[in-house]
Image (cartoon, rainbow, N blue to C red; front, side):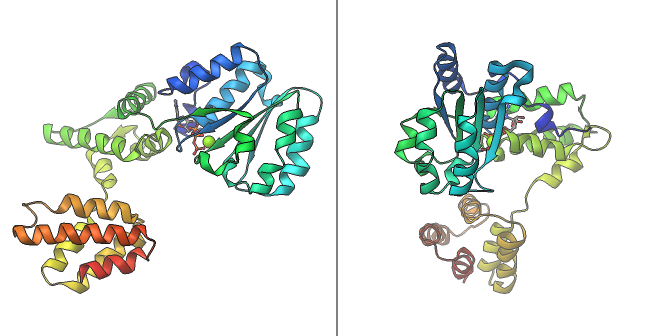
Length: 311
Ligand SMILES: Nc1ncnc2c1ncn2[C@@H]1O[C@H](COP(=O)(O)OP(=O)(O)OP(=O)(O)O)[C@@H](O)[C@H]1O
Ligand SMILES: [Mg+2]
């Protein structure tokens, strides 16, 4: 079986969870006191929530952990039925187990409410809820759980992990000049920055970069950089080429899946003396982009706003 790198390098013990000292301290404290409490893991994607839940199961149940670990995903079956028919019953069956409920912030309020009693009355079941947004969980659940915050991983830690994986996988960076070497280095830094603390995303992108000879070459890196479509659209519009500008912007937003936040960031960064010589025009653009940002935040159709901006 050929595991993805993300699965192959999933931590197996709490000590292997990287960059979450606060979370791990809280969890170890609870586990060492042997109290029967529940957990609410809260934080952005790819920061170790699911992995940590599995590590707790290994810690409590050893090699047989899979027999004691039940994972559910609230986004598949977000309703009251799943809670009533499955979770509530399971929580009261004799024996010990962990019920991990991923994406619990997608449960309806009614379904969350139905979990109060199981949380309080169960003796053998530890619930672990995982959420991206803590505010979507009702107080009645929060007050019955130990809340464990997961943070975006610092770039340094993401970088270190990627290089550990590359070493373990015997992946070689190959280049034929200093210039290529530099480009690859920049490309890897770009990969790390755009993962924005999401280690799963960083490892998945790394995996896409590797060719069949287990090499990373400059060609793989170039494919990684997103073209600066929005900036080119703005420059085309300044030159009076509206049709081309509109096409580029559509391409950015629809075909390449840029979010309006990414587009606005690119536009802001693009207003440099080098790109736009005219100082007054630079200031005007700056103000217009601020307006554009406001309008997009208010929820008007971004594409409509973006093309309006170009005109
Ligand atoms: N803190 C971490 N330490 C080590 N590896 C990690 C960490 N966070 C993420 N990873 C890597 O990323 C993969 C995905 O992590 P995990 O499934 O635990 O994320 P998650 O927080 O549950 O994300 P989501 O909110 O999307 O469910 C893991 O298999 C592992 O390779
Ligand atoms: Mg998860």
